[in-house]
Image 1 (cartoon, rainbow, N blue to C red):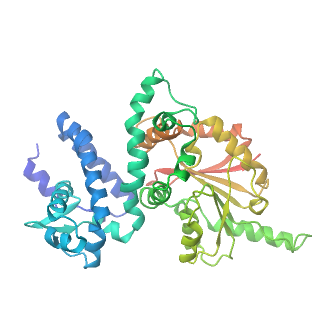
Image 2: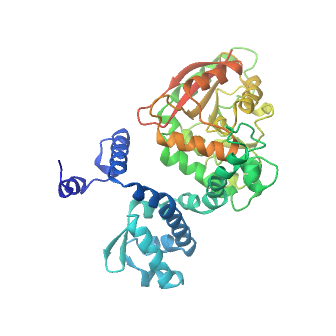
Image 3: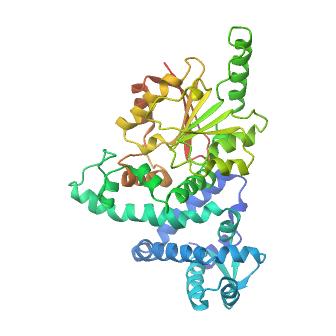
Amino acid sequence: MASADQLIANLEGISASSFANEAERIRARDAVFEALRRIQSPWDIAWDHVWVSGAINACVATLINIGVFAKWAEIGGEPVTCTRLAELTGADELLIRRMMRVISGQHLITEVALDTYARTPWAKRFAEDPAFGSMYGGFYHELNNPMFRSLPAYLKSTNFRNPTNVNDCNLQFWLGQKGNLFQYIGTNAALTAPFNDAMECHSKYNLTSWVDIYPTETVLEAAAAKAAQQANGTNGDALPPPLVVDVGGGKGHDLVKFLGRHPSIPAGSLVLEDLPDILNGVKDSLAKENATAISVLPHDFFTPQPARACGARIYFMHNVLHDWPDETALQILRALAPAMEKGYSRLLIHESFVSAEKPLARVTVSDITMMACLAAAERSEDGWSRLIEQAGMRIVKIWRAVEAVESIIEVEVV
């Protein structure tokens, strides 16, 4: 039996960069987490759940609001004292010290000398990516926290029935008013931008990029072949349809990934669709990134596709359908299907599968998140197959990556 000293020695020096690839890092992370649970006492676990989680989020959100992480980066990011941070931010030194002690105790920053702290990769991220801090602000405090807090009382009020009505679920129970999640997001100024930021971070950090799972070069090849065919026919002067239409695409982060892989595509080749409130400010943001290939098109995906978006090679839905119960998801698919050109257009559904045995923890947490916010759920592979078939479509192929939480279901109209 290994001693505590031996175990600690073996763990010294391990970091995210210790592994050959992302798949190996995830395997090691999950194994370490499983070992931690075996080592923890029941009280250790309860302490983390009931006390630690809330305290961390409160401290991190406060330190972000004070400007600690931003100011720390501005002075070079070297180890810093709370006295210096107070001078830089104008906040109370004792308040900063108490909160820095909390996150240091959770190994989110490192105390390197008396009252002196060094940044970790996590702490650096706040300055490197402004969207990262949004998860601790409006997204957590205006959505995730109240949703999970009210869920047990809501389920008790339904005599513990599995929720399936997006218009009468935990969200309405908590708010005391009608309207679904996306209407709430669009009308809550404290949530709209943080929600988009959180979805961008979820895509950027938690998930394998879709362009690393699906062979995107085939999109350009298929479009070129069609253009050549049309040039020999009667439609040579017709405006070419888009290459990719991102349906419910938020800030356009998935289209930006495609553009990064194929930077020479013409302006307007990529179409970003979402509700007008969700798209507030997105056009300006894309302009700053010089993403001229992306055009922004306000659209409600429960309605038929606009003419501009018809006949695309790819219709892309990333974490869209998991937001809706089956009956509602069918409405979305049936509204999209007429825009797809038979034999040419493809729908890529980038979503998680709930495995029958030992499903991934990140997928099961997402499943309860969908329940809490939208009376929806993550689906099994069989569940996805049934939904797609009911919509009058068929699965061409399921694209998977070893390290990916999500797969890509390639679909065509029948």
